[in-house]
Image (spheres, rainbow, N blue to C red):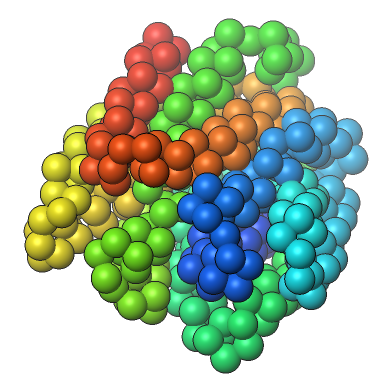
Length: 383
């Protein structure tokens, strides 16, 4: 059965990628959605945030259900329901209905976060867990890269409706695959979990959740507006801007795997996370300073910031799961991911307001402080 763990890892990663393609695909479609619905920058920020708004109310309940019912039922049900909401959104002509359906898609699809993470954790030993969950965490950048590469040409031919339908189809396909293929890990690989404190009563979990949330605000400030900024302000075509976005995702995926292996080798999750948060902050500062510089200078710094913005998530995810233990992993991951979802929901509209009130350069510069604040909160957690 040990070889089956790689199948579990593949299923969990692909399922998470389909949901991540929704989360990061909406920013890719943002220029077309803004034009089609006649939206302001703040209004399109709400559309971008809608998936996260939905997920922040359901991540913890999904996590608790995963601990009780198992990964297969939770993942399959949630992704299938998310697919239905995306189909309704695709045929909507109302801004309000669009936002509401994206909120529902986020609420339902959030099931995959705790379910796929708990499944992978249960099948891999601690000495391999950083690497395995690092691979699983590549789902977000890989889903984003797929969305960035596929959605612009699809939308060019079939409009935003076609793009949303493709996202719905991906969620439905992975819902079926997960429902058929996922299995609970053998009990002997679960480890001793009886004495673990419930995640919501563990101060370390609160530090991880809040600290990660601060870093993710900076992450979303970069990723959610990459295509809009490069297209609307720096003059790149939508396809070229989406290509830059895809490059950020691919580089971020590679960094997640490297960070996971690094954490396995040093036997710690928090110390590498802190170093990556500092590097991310430096990259944002450099990008902010070069916002109006020639593209040959700005793009390398901006791509580095976008890649580093995604490098740390797997370590935070793994640390949360390991602190709780397998029997509480669903609740722990649901709690931690709720904090990230709240941050992701508020970041786009608030960042848009900040840009409209000041400038892109100043907004990026202020965002650079957040990874440092998040790292400061997590610094006292045992490595």
